[in-house]
Image (cartoon, rainbow, N blue to C red; front, side, top):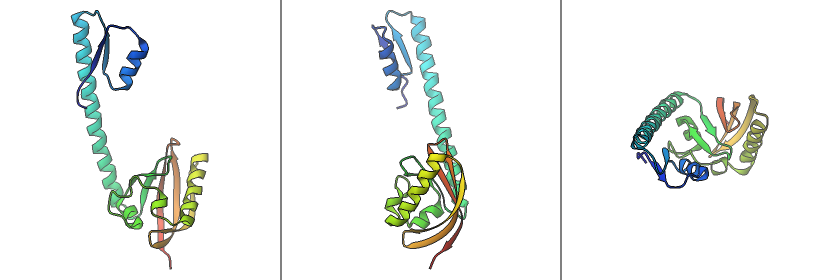
Length: 173
């Protein structure tokens, strides 16, 4: 994974080059080529790979900082993808779901809610994905073994992920 790849081919075919780049190649040379072309392609591929590694490290650090900030919030915060799977969730969201930290990620509401609550969240998710406009609503949902009434702010981000912030939560009867 940390290797820079330059594909050398005797065929000058744009489809082969395109496929090579899709599979992760960092360069493409067609024979015959000059030694200087190989050197330039290799150095470019190595530099590109270094930048990819640096970006990956930076992204991981940023994700860890965001997770730390979210975990300090006293309310559940989470983001779902278009398939309604949780992609990030803070400590309080895990507590509400009755799960250990990190265990909510990858799950859907079906795993943590009874059918009637899941249906409500599915309808809300569909609304935010269809319209893309932020809105606030008060909902009573059963999550895990608790019924909770909360005022929730819903927002869509690039119509790919949906984020929620429960701004107020009261434990039901």
